[in-house]
Length: 334
Image (tube, helix red, strand yellow):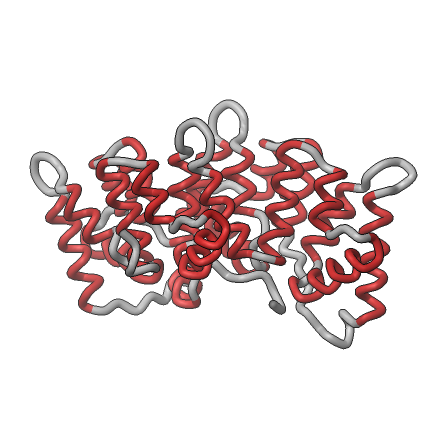
């Protein structure tokens, strides 16, 4: 890959600039949602059928169109009408994709402590274009500079990684510049920063990973294995600890093997005691565009498709809504 993958479709990028193009099905969906939330009680089945069955582009258009038609934000309506894990997911689904990511960041940084896993899975490993959209969206929605927020809410080495990611510094791959000599130099540089005289230079490692386009980074990884008999992932694991290690490996993974990395993240939300519903909702939502590829990797790694896992780990309306979202990307899901 010449650059990090986009998780927002082109149509969402255009809509975020204020130029959405509507079609009759979008108006129909808005009317169905309005009908499902009128009067006493909420028709959850209708919301599942309407919001859950739409792809990223359609949901983005519904979010814009609903406010135009009814004079109120769809997200606020979902917050009023629904609660719990189901309610939070309906709120995310009622927002354009960048706004949903902004809401997840807000959730991760609000209150006592920061949910590092929730935060780094949104910010790290994103393309320059989507980092730019995310920063503009966050400021527009919350009147807060995203870089300043992350700087104030995090600390230590993981803060260095976040701030590097938020600069959107990934280079465009150029075979004339990212040549064999540059690859050899990159492998040596990575090695030096892992084993400096004064310890590991975490900031320099993060800068190298974030700046490197995926194709070049893969070439460096191959050269590193050839020269030192271990890959970049192994080198990072040896030098870093805790959430910083997790976040750095996630960033590297989203550049080198994004579908595998997303599959492992989704699986991790259902591993161990209990289910991380917030993490699961966020991941299914964010990776819906690439879910067919992620599904294939999930089956290879865990001998289980994501729909089956969701069926066994969740229940009720929340389960049905997640499954409907999965079916949009993978029609054969249960």
